[in-house]
Length: 103
Image 1: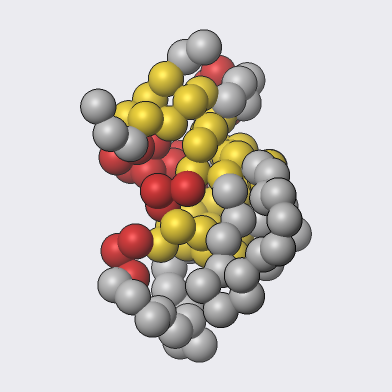
Image 2: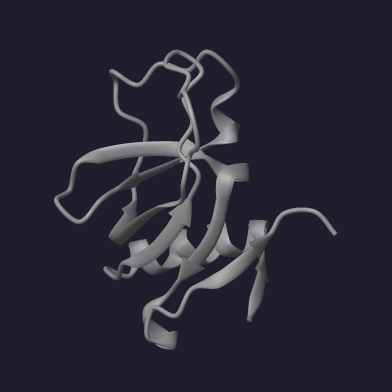
């Protein structure tokens, strides 16, 4: 399986979004306010684009830990960067690459 460094994945997602493209990603959903009970699986989002912070966005911790994006329906979403496990870009046919955060 192909791999990509986490920082490179974020940078590339931002560049693709700026050029009008989109990307796919898979991550583990997590909420500090609403802890999940039981097993949590990967959430796959397709047609994503990066977004800027909205005025109503509130961060309990430093905002640099969050990845801000819009889903396919242009709904604003966010996830912890560190929980992104796979990401795919259009030049590879959206084939998901494993995101490596620590080496």
